[in-house]
Length: 459
Image (cartoon, rainbow, N blue to C red; front, side, top):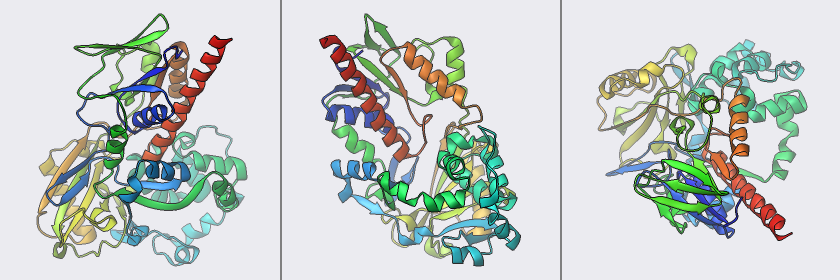
């Protein structure tokens, strides 16, 4: 592999962009192919007048030195916005009322979010034995270690807010690997969290910041793409084939190559069996991943139309509350410049793995449902002055029980097709920082293979 040291990247999601940027920075020639007219994949910011909305991820949790250094390298640190300190307050709906999630031992004692019975049950956590199940669901893990109430009013809404899914549907080991490691290493989440602080510092962790940029998260992929030498937009690659040890790509009108390696950065549901050499059996195993539908409703209101102070990050609705919405972000509270002066911007999430059928409704039907529930929960009155409905037929990959078979199949395909690499949020985390770190690691792996091949050829 890598005889000519030129790599093709198909797809300009964050992972693919990071691979291309890192390779080019380290002297490897790259060509990036994107079927749309802009980079970023699911990271998309839209400005409509004075309203600024995020169609995909809304924030980046900055906690790793490598990510912070990359932002500085790209010059984005000067555009960085740190979330309003009020965003540290996060609400959970209980009995129809927004209750702040405890952030300290004293607030945990006094909170009305959990009953005294639920609080006392958490104190048993250090004495719960490790599980012998190598691949348990998040729900099984949370109920066993923390109790049913914490599952219902902490873990369930958290999973809905981050993964648009239910804890019963997801593998703990693949979705929340840090929790899995804490139990395995320390036998307890509480003890492990306390003892692991020093280790996290040694791993390059920095003080956490919840961030975006002045013109939204799309500034990140735009900046990365602007640093690349060769980017082909509006170019859909239909086939990648290997001939005489080198790769060639074909679009509807052109062929490209030769390349020493090809990185395909695409959601699994968009993979086509005709794109690269793969058996029907392996293709089915690789793509057997559920992406639940999700609707996102951006709503703007005059401030006097909302009774709640919106003094926080937003709220999440546990499944126990039998709500039709998963939760909402207080977007104009989080960062400045998201709404005109005198207005609030809310970002509401509907559907996901909990109630997928609601996500597929027409905009008018969803709006009626959302307005009724926002009225009950935060005192919204009247019609919104701004509305934008974003529908994701397939949103976030569900790392289900047995996900090892998916990952093993991907590794098998890569091994059989020398120089082929499959990348995206279906591996090792769905967040923007996860994708960046995965891209950096993949770029290093490609460079390492290149160096080894060069050394072999020299000898």
